[in-house]
Every structure is written in C-alpha cells, then in structure tokens.
Image (cartoon, rainbow, N blue to C red; front, side, top):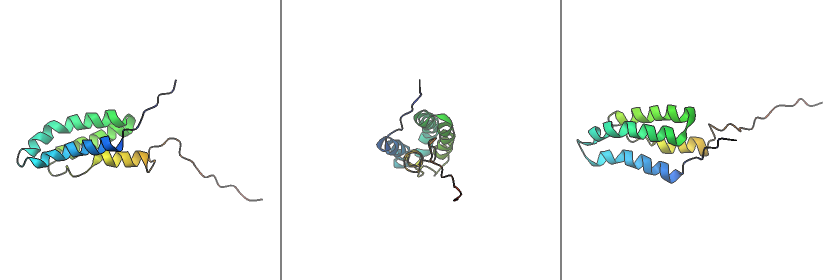
Length: 102
C-alpha cells in the first residue's frame, strides 16, 4: 500500500497566512497573540505539509510567528509554491543523462 499525501490548496495556505497577519490588526496586543498562535501555526504547518519539509517548515513558521515584526512572511504560501509550482520537494524529478554520440 502506498502512502499518498495530498497537497493543501493554495486557498488554504493563503487563509493560514491571513490568520497570522490578523495580529497586526490589534496594536500592542498583536505580539501577545503571536506567542499563542506560533506553536499552533507550526503544528498545523507540520501536519499539513508532512515529512521532513513539514517539520523544518514548521520550525521556520514557529520562529517567524514568534519573532516581533516577522508576520509579513507568507510561509504557508511560499511552501505551497515550492511544493506545487517549483517541484523542489518532488521525488519524481526527471534527470537528463548525457549520452555520448557515436
């Protein structure tokens, strides 16, 4: 049996980044909200993307959400593009093997 992990939708990733931006809407209290949101966001990130990329991305997401003023980084959306459009994490990459002419 093959374990297939479906990629999250771009809309979901944008929505998750938007939730992270909401702390900017509450001046002064936003950074306190970020302390609570950072571990939740990191856990969702790790679960959503799975594997090593999910864990590493979750750690980055945690730091990005926890540090003051770093909420502008759309980490979910960046990972979506890296996974779905740039194929950085694809295991089925095609490799061109040079063949000597005769």
